[in-house]
Length: 287
Image (cartoon, rainbow, N blue to C red):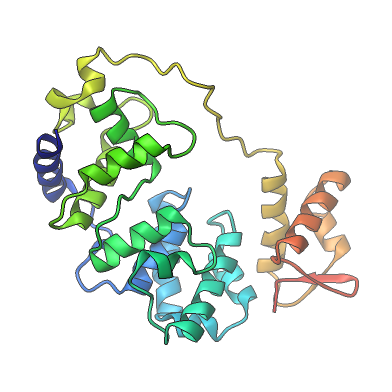
């Protein structure tokens, strides 16, 4: 089975891969790291302009580490999940202080950085340094689950069996190509909804297709909601601070969200997360 997947998927990738800046020859490990932070739960189309501006402004970890964390939050714009900006800034500081300004090239050292979990460490080690690691994002997990196991959707979190399977499929030669190829296949063909099986390079080997595409029968899958949530409220409050040159008054924040109870809860959580600094009776991005 590994060879039956490896050759057609990597060949498909060579012919169909999107031209994305973090995949181009000469991309620095720092640029790969920035892309991985930004792409978490965020579509490529939204990431591209912010990514380009970010690397123009801070082309190295030391450049980012030299500015206040609030600058990173402001530059993050509307990518969502702004704590990622704080963690990327904290990682830049750690890289500058502990690794002489160079993104570390091993999984364990990467995992020691703020905000770098298993997936992100494996992705950076693989894509930036060609290390042999299973890179298990949602797209890869779905591709492997369908093609090898025969399940429509993976479990909510990575299982031991899933990791063992993925590790056994990573080739010794060019492991990073396999990682990005399976990721791209999941993003463009083996999608969560309406997969284009007729365009899949491994359709004839896919266990899910061969089983008649059985419907998912696991725990209910959570749909993402946004309108009216605390997350939306937090985003509105942060937008006010990003668009202001200095601190703002509480009354200015009150205009951004009508529900006072939800607004206060969201503001308190932003302060707790370090995304908002309290300056007397005013509020600002962290300095």
